[in-house]
Length: 593
Ligand SMILES: OC[C@H]1O[C@H](O[C@H]2O[C@H](CO)[C@@H](O)[C@H](O)[C@H]2O)[C@H](O)[C@@H](O)[C@@H]1O
Image 1: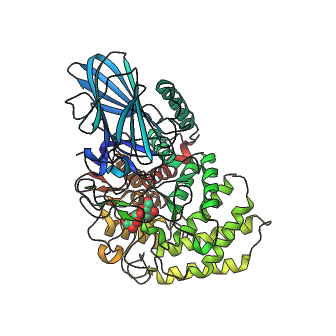
Image 2: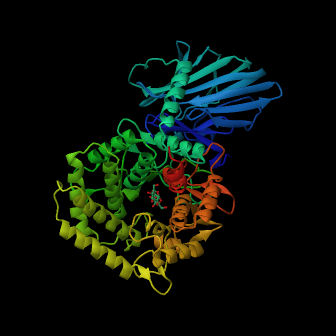
């Protein structure tokens, strides 16, 4: 069984696949990120669908890497007979999604085997496979997939799979292309896999070269930005939190969630990181997505949406999948969609303010949106909510949520002050801003321990409070900020990293079991340390965090400090956002070009 860190990501900005160190594509949802998977070995076994290309008898590749600044993965195999490279990519889509796998001999003469098991509907449906014009065509219900190779190699059916075995000498190439399309439509136009490889490389390099960051660890920053871009659903501008579902937050545990949706929180933070690195177009596309997604009554604002702004994301389980390393249930959909999370208003309004400052074209709808969101918040801010950790154990007055309410009102006040042409009740908003600030200081702060707390009146802590200085709620040198950072390090620290919260998990989040250290929180600690003048410590922690990324620079949501393993959905936007923001905070001023 592979570990989470054994996977690398490829994708076409509409969906993504995970390729293991054993040469197997074990996760692929077609045609969109949130469609049913046709390869689900990641959450089950080979019978749930996968596509392995490797020399027979070899378990693990010798090495692998992304080709320069791209999302093209080169995996190298060394055998007693010579070496071979498999290059995996999903080219920019014209009509249909294509998965391209190019085998190239590097030395000697190597035998290579391809084993394809397509299992539509999350690994549950075995398609009928026929031969047509030298292609293998798999059909089941709404799905159809075509497999061909250039040059053509012999394929045969066995064990409910499609197999081929061939040899390549140095310089020889065999390209496989798997193309999906709706089964009722004619086969889409064929792509040239070699031309696709060239174009894809050129496109990614051109995109990466626009990155403004020139400081240390630039390769990791670029990899994070490419990953964030890969999580963007190009047709609509929506951004998914991760391309996977149900990679567990606890080995063998039940904390398994579907992240293939657009959280307003995760996507606004992604937008902020992309903007800071110089990517304005993506920010504009996302802002337009937002305007469409949230159109309607502000009271109906959801904390997350589907890729095109869909509102219903019902959560259910897939009992036929055994789960990653036995972690069940495997869930599809996410019930957190129904929650109230007040922080989202602050994140949205803050990101729109940043976008305005970054010069994004002014749109009358943007101001209208902020005004209605704030009108809703004017009374709603007094309610308890589920908070940014999306607890399932009942609502509370989360301090981070109220701080983010303050952010929303503060950014509105500043906009009214800065742009006299905007219309709004400036005095009323100033009063509300002061009131929220006062209430948080009075009810969300424990003077005995000199720390802000997770919720009003509680003694528990919350790593989200590390964001207090960053969002400007209090200055970094305020004793309450310093006390909170120290308390969080003492009480939530885990082997130098940070847990989200300590509260008795079952009582707070309504779930049994524990979870790992939350990587985004560790990046927030980096930022907090840096802001409070402890830059050396911040840099040391940042470098440690870089070391937790896998061999191709990818991070999951959490880290298991006991077993030294990545945990949770993968790769996770939240973690890569943290990496980009911390790099910019630590080194941006001195090194940015
Ligand atoms: O662990 C409990 C919750 O976990 C998920 O939420 C987390 O992921 C979200 C997407 O990255 C992020 O926005 C949120 O802050 C995280 O807590 C899951 O989606 C929830 O359903 C679950 O309750």
